[in-house]
Image (cartoon, rainbow, N blue to C red; front, side):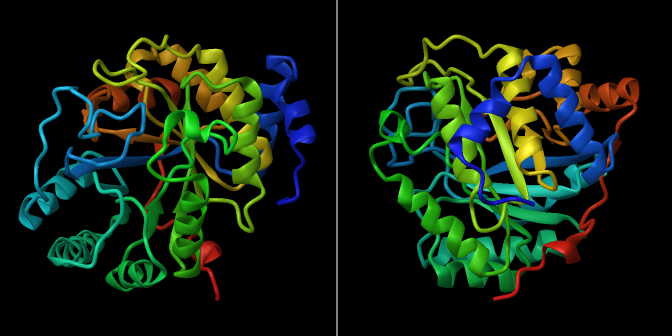
Length: 325
């Protein structure tokens, strides 16, 4: 495992002829992962809309007119019911998202801690994505049984201010550091198709691959352009761009779960198969990713059957990822 990649080295990998890049990534994937095994995750929006941030891609930002209605934090009973449904449909990781800028020490956070305990008791890997976290809050989530925390970089440090101005790139890294210190598994990736250049995509991969420890999970999202957001007119990302990002991420971070995330609804099975060949080994399943449409469980299980893929068991190799302070 290397954490000392240079941008030049990453650029040389990224810009290879696509077939060669895919072959290298597939070879490394076989050396470090069980091929044919895909982690199935479900993402539920437990608190929707009304976010004060100005992320240019996000339908949940209060300042954009996207038709997303703000809802307060869901009831624990309903969340556990959704978790049970996800488990019955084959998910082994259940992620709860709240449209907050940062976690605050209040009754809502206490309720989230209670939800984490409940989902954990079901034998599911429980994940949260709720904005910025302090070290103390991360520790409380860990004690409640949180397995992973998602906090995406979104894009490169160089392009960040083009997409978000209500926080800075270092805020992202601070939260990732707080999560890591608490011994929680880190999930962090980004979005392509925001108008960024290839160099800026390489910059995002550089930050992820040179963290002191690679994230255990890296979601690669294709922008879903939502009407009412500043990026509503962006064109759909080509599958070749997704394949190039996934393959490069696989080579840089061999043991990481690379998650084929947002944008799958627009990808036929053949395109998704190319992403799996390039090293993707995790998906979000279920009809919605927070507020964005997603393929149904039935469609995904049919794809797994045709491609010969198996869902990965929960907590597999967890002991290898235990972080010691």
